[in-house]
Length: 579
Image 1 (cartoon, one colour):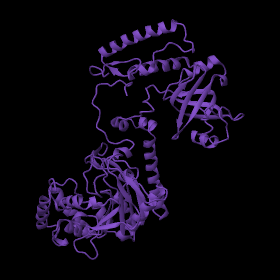
Image 2 (cartoon, rainbow, N blue to C red):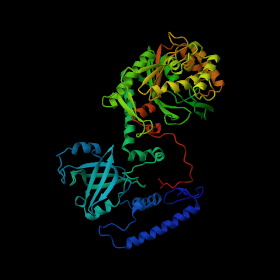
Image 3 (tube, one colour):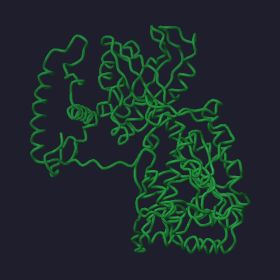
Image 4 (cartoon, one colour):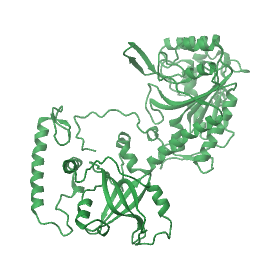
């Protein structure tokens, strides 16, 4: 229950700040519960030796938290045992234990592997009893689990056994010293001679059967989600494998991994709205980077011919199923290469990655509306299909576009506005040529790309950092890779002409004056670097989070981010015992 107003009094049990009225209510409730416990303590013990305690399954989260907190505070006071010990020596992981002793025939049902002593540690998920002298626990860790078969016969004494077992609750982290064994039913177990509480869980752990179903709670309390969901754990292990694969692939090609600044005075390298922060000592507003591109190309000017970076970038834009304002981007720059070389690398990288993750197969399935929704089949086998932007739009819309070299003009702008209106394609202000073309592509070409495909033949007006096409005036050497109708990477033959780059930046500045917040400003430092000579270079960038979505069959980008952007919860001093 939330407090009635702003917290002004400290709860001595939970440590939270609550109202005076709420504090009085809790003190009266605790007095009543203390009297009940005194009566229970005075009553004769039950036949199984346990005290007449309240059924913890019937308690609400606040009541459970307070009851468990008092019990752990009592242990802290008596140190019998210390509920937060400094160290427990682990001799084997749970996964190694299962691998080494789980072999069929090694341990017979109902028997122990005498002479072997093992120390394990993990978290208790489920607890079961068979009388007062036999307890079963499921010990989880490293994505696997093993049963603890606690028998009073294996303990130092029955009283010690009972006292120790009464301490543990679901969610506690425990250490176990014991012998590998199997239960009478043949389940691999560890029969403990000693169990130690290493860190108690003060909260009710959601049911192991039903798990954590509330999506908001899963995203806000990712630690709980990871504890209870093997699928969530699988997603983030796969994410790590994807990033490691990219890193190993680029390293093998002779690329050097570098780090570039997060904050800068100019937000360049991409078409996006930046976040603004402030440097107190310099009394200067700075931007969080929207891309590392310009820094990486400056390094290529400096003689680092193959560089890449995997890191966070920040774009102050909307949140939806495939966009998060903070995301992981991989960019690389390769001297003496062009977009065609980079296109081959893209195909090879992703086909190899999918085979690595998918037991050698290039075919994967994706469910954009969830597991029970429609199914898309993706085949990463190369070569991928290529769609020429203007030619495909002309084919789909049954029109002839103005010459490519005029697509930046006011006349072309009117043509594009009329085309969008005719086909019901909405484009909010400012209706620049770039934005109008982007909306048309999103409506008529991107949905064609279910299996990975390239869109090529971009007009120069859409690509201020790409080199003009060597044989098609008005177009540039750029491709975008799409998967399930969504962009996953973007690449150019990089513009290395400082005179042309300045003109492109000036055009972007004009678009910014028209109200396009995403247009790029002039970066004099970068232009100056180009004036020292950038070799012919192929550049590439890929959003890692979105790729992970498709390769883990996750319909929401929040599923592949450990801590996604969430709106704050507006409450008054929510009790820390409430889930």
